[in-house]
Every structure is written in structure tokens, then in C-alpha cells.
Image 1: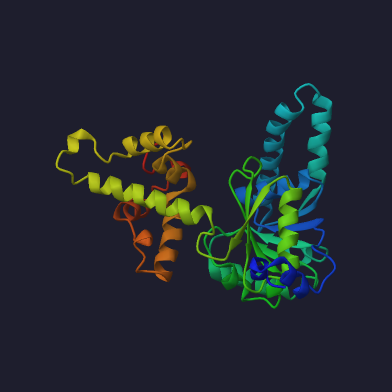
Image 2: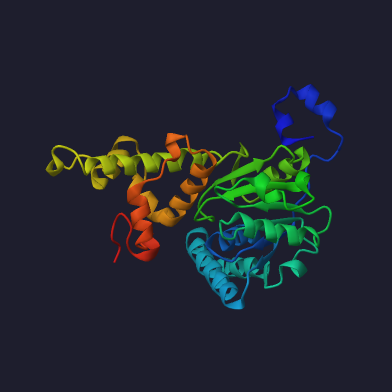
Amino acid sequence: MSFLTQQLPRQIRRSLSSSAATHVAIKHVTIIGGGQMGAGIAQVAASTGHTVMLVDTNEDILKKSIKGIEASLIRVVKKKFADKPEAGEEFIQKVLQNVTTSTDAGASIQSSDLVLEAIVENLKIKQDLFGHLDKLAPAHTIFASNTSSLSISDIASSTNRLDRFGGLHFFNPVPMMKLVEVIGTSATSQKTFDSLLNFSKVLGKTPVSCKDTPGFIVNRLLVPYTLEAIRLHERGFFCAFPSSGHGSKEDIDIAMKLGAGYPMGPFELSDYVGLDTMKFIMDGWYAMDPDNPLFAPSKLLNKLVAEGKFGKKTGEGFYKYK
């Protein structure tokens, strides 16, 4: 039964279901990509008793990933085991023992219940990866992407397991952020979708169900919001009284923090996410729907990215961090 049939009345859904099992128990997880997101997901999965294989292209990246996981666990232990340091050290070692690393993706998925990629946001690279792994993975293995902006259907099209393919979009930093967007396509089976929902809950996260639309829920609302803030700022450059500060990025950030209760203003958030990432997402959406004014390019954003000013990670974006 397709993910989309969950919108039908319950009795009809039951009649369409042909499987007694509601979900696959995910115990062994392979994560492709040892960057911040992949390492964060690996940490959370290992902390909840899953056997994790973390895969990347070279050993240096993987060594850095493990160091990052260990440093994050130390921070967790200081809060969770403040009065029991020995128990905290035991917890760290137990979690680290659940994580194995490899540079061979194909050899790493033979016993995996779930293969989750968290690599560069490039459709062809993701398609090539899954197309290759599809030939090697066991039939029961579920594939999932952590993409924040690309179509799950497009990524899955390179495989022959469309019914066992979905999206799991985590948020950064993964150990702290509770939300996971679980995405189903028109071909995702209900069993697969329920398995991904259950896996998210076992990780201690709160899953929300999403359709395979650009940006899913959070980014579909958040990215246009930040772009509209940038446009407001751009218009402020040409206002009649520029000395009044109308439309300044500082005023906009303060207004949204104090007026809407947001922890960060849109410019602070954009710098945190990465202006290159913001531009990549918007360029992709604009290419798909050029008549949608929400996806219109920003000259200021394009200028900053062209200058290599991506935000906090480069030391300068809308604000300077050096």
C-alpha cells in the first residue's frame, strides 16, 4: 500500500494492506557521509542501541567524524551523568563500540536494514550512489536520503526499489534537534514509511509525515521567509531615508526575535545555515518553478556567495565573525 493511501478512510486502508507486519525493525544502519550531519545521525543511532556503519571516501574524514562524535558524547555525559562520571565513561565507550567505519560502501551494506545517505546536495551524485548500492544491498534493505531540498522520487529513480525508498530529513545539530521529516513518495510502501517513522521514534525524535514536495515542511516555509527578509533589506538600500535604518538586517533580525519569538533572526539563521546552501536550494526551486515569486533569486545573496562569503563557516556572510 502506498504512503499516499494513508489519506484514505481507515477501513479502505486496511483492505488494501496485504502485509501483517506494520514495519521492519531497523537494527543495522549504514550511513553514507561522515560530515556533520552523517556523524550526528550515527551518534544518535549508536546511542539508541543500533549497529552503525559510517562510510566516507577516505580515512581522514572518518577519523575526524569519530573524534567529533566522541567530543559530542562528552558534552552529553557532562549533563546526563554529572554525578556518575564512571557511568558516563561507560556510556561513551558503549556508543563508540556501536560505530564502525569504512571507505567501501558496497561491502558495508550486506547486513544493513537501512542505508541512509547524508552527502553533498547533488542529484546526479546521489542517483549514482544509490544506483550502485541497489545492485549490492539485500532485498529487504530500505534506502533513505537526508536531502533537504531535492526530490526523493528523483533520487530513487536510479534504483529498482521504489517501494523501499523514502526520505529522513534530520536537522542540525542532530543530537539536539528533535524533529525528523519523514518523506514518502507515491511509490513508497506503507510498510516502508511506517518503518522510517518507527525508526525516528526509537531514536528519540519526533517525526512528522511529509509529501515529496520542494523543501518538505520546514524548508518550504523557512527558506522563502529568509529570502523575503533579504528582499526587504535590499529594498531598504534604496529607501528615501536610508539614515533611518529602515530595512537594515540588524533591525529585521531584532524584530523577528523580539516580535515573533524566534531564537535567531533571518540573517543570523542564513549565516548559520550557509549562504551557499541557501542559494543552492533556491536556485533548484526556481529552476523547477520560475514563475513562483517566492523562489525569485536575490541579487544580494548571489553577490555574497560569488565573493565566497557563505556565513559563519567562512567567517563572513551578512555579518562578520572574525
